Length: 143
Image 1 (tube, helix red, strand yellow):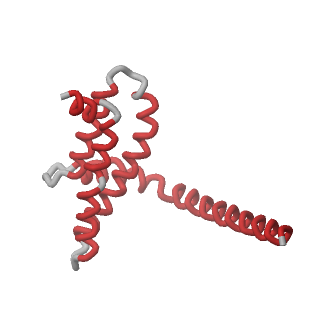
Image 2 (cartoon, one colour; image 1 turned 30 degrees about the horizontal axis):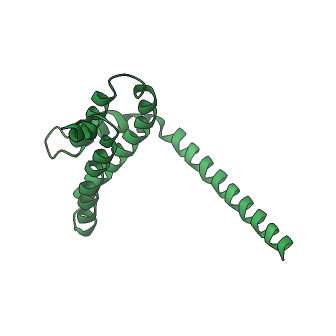
């Protein structure tokens, strides 16, 4: 009984959340990749987009809500949310969140996001090139 409470309400919920959020959707994604239809591919991509944003929000919420005495309830709600995102029901969480929240926000800010992505790509390439040059210089000095 105590171990079940630890899993559902304590830090064990992280293990349970990973076991729920990744294996089955990964299996479904692999099946979708191997199928000839695009509909299942799109459904899987939507899940991963929504889940990725859920994980980003979770980082912030974990810090804020982790300090409150109802952390067990919060952990249980996260598990329920993930199950709802995966549920094969008409009011699927992934479809609802994607179409009602993510897609409208993305369409509204797409040009700004494109600029940010391009800037990030340029900065990453610059960092990599500088690191490579620094490493090459260090190697030349060593030998």
